[in-house]
Image 1 (cartoon, rainbow, N blue to C red):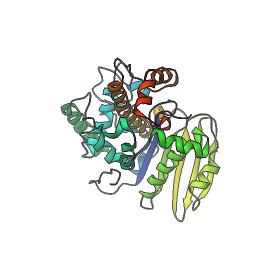
Image 2: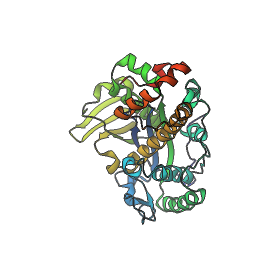
Image 3: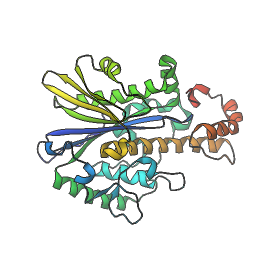
Length: 333
């Protein structure tokens, strides 16, 4: 299986723009998901806002009166009260513009994160779970909105060409943490793995990658040199809100930056965050469903520290009786 990519039908594109964002960095339970979303655009649009370019069909606001597709910070699209609808609508509509219509979680993972399919069977709560999609939206709504967005993309010569996710399940996360003993390093390693994938798919063409910056790190030179030893690295800027680099090999020059508030600055970052959050919440649905079958009356959890401790106390007896390895269940950091 290979990660999904559309096959553009509108002639050559001159620029590749990507955004990367994560979901699940802080929780004690559930997976860490990092996603990269790749767009192909005319060269003249490299520095332009894709919200502005696609303003006829995509909105940067979430409103019940908004007829356009809301694509914005995933934290503003999702809450436990409103549910998956906002995330799902954006994620599945954008896949539909490329002709992709996953009808189950397994199909979605097969499209964007095929490597995790081999890891799922090791976890009882993921082993047999394959939720039907869509969960909250109707297929008709997704098709209608995808038609509108698709027409807008054709008229502006913009194409979402790939969605690439790295899904790090709990036990796999713990094994990496044991090696490096630093959560930020683990997260950055997934980001740089996605950057490598974007570079490798560019066909020798320079790409522009925007990454939502987590934490206070401003210097990435050492990590970039380790991940891209065959490239010449030039530091463009290392500041409080943006750290930018050029990576050059032969005649190819890639642009990479790490920015604060990336979900509000770059549409590809916002969309990457939506896919990461959507995938994580679907997997947390599997997690809660499994433990809900083991413990009567169990309240579900989002996996964050305080409520995770409550949840772990409530399932303690079931964990022991099932012989669950704690390193598969609880993240070490």
